[in-house]
Length: 378
Ligand SMILES: Cc1cc2nc3c(=O)[nH]c(=O)nc-3n(C[C@H](O)[C@H](O)[C@H](O)COP(=O)(O)O)c2cc1C
Image 1 (tube, protein in one colour):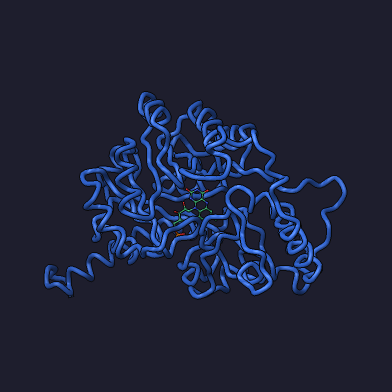
Image 2 (cartoon, helix red, strand yellow):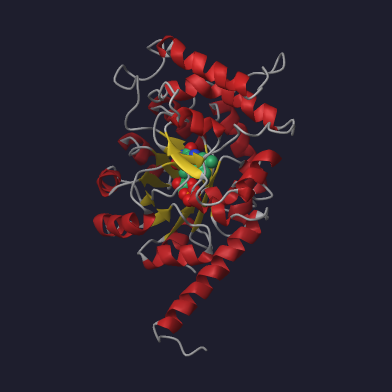
């Protein structure tokens, strides 16, 4: 399975695993793929700590870091965040709606002394740049960016250090902009993907992006949950697969047990593409929380970054409450996840998931060869 992209990155299999969890990143890289740590939820100090840990646990194998420097968000035109009073822009109507929802589902306040999650996530160019600064001090092999092309100087900085740059896109237009920005790898993310996603399915998007940016290599993202799907992505012209949902319920994942159980129980119909996490469309588990934001009483979502600012304390409380394991305590609990959630049926070590992708894709290619009469095997 040594594809050109494997040669460039020094990996065995063209399997890229996005995760916010350092244990997953290290496990996938050690299993021959490329683990990519999502930086967005970490402060620069936390990211430094996570990367030090990965350096100590990845046995010298290559890994990457993913930042989020969006092309558009509130405050960008005012010289980035920090210059405007964002808190004052959250309407009372939204505060009341969230308060009412937590009361209805019996979600208690946070215990004294416990902080809520950071209300201003790294969804800005300044936060992304701070993540890049930290990441570049470590032996990363890939720097990826979501929600827009990375700034030119970031691309140059990475290249001068021998680090490849990737960027996620959901349309051909975006892919062409990524290529113009100088990225080495375009990640084409289909409608079925977990997290921020566009509205074109992977089956339609991937070959279009492959043609539009050739000879730049393309990774297929969204809907890759098995070897058969990986083989299909390669047949569509992708140079590899970029996965996210698949790792959430692995043994190494730090998702709480209540969440892993929900993921394992979910079918492919149990996701929804909603703006209720960030203000931009993101596919996630369908829960009482997403239903409420889509419901008749919803005040509607706010633009990035206000939506997360308005909800981060509530989401921390929901996460805490679910850990009590009391009946009904996980009703509001969710996560970004794609439609392949319906294929996750048990908790497995990440190494096992990598092995299944590799073997399953080889079997699928063999089977396709037989169907086409290209193979002698029975
Ligand atoms: C829980 C979760 C969080 C995500 N957060 C990010 C992120 O911060 N940055 C990013 O580039 N992609 C993020 N993604 C998207 C993944 O990078 C990837 O494109 C997507 O999961 C691929 O589709 P799949 O879920 O069908 O495997 C996230 C995905 C999930 C499931």
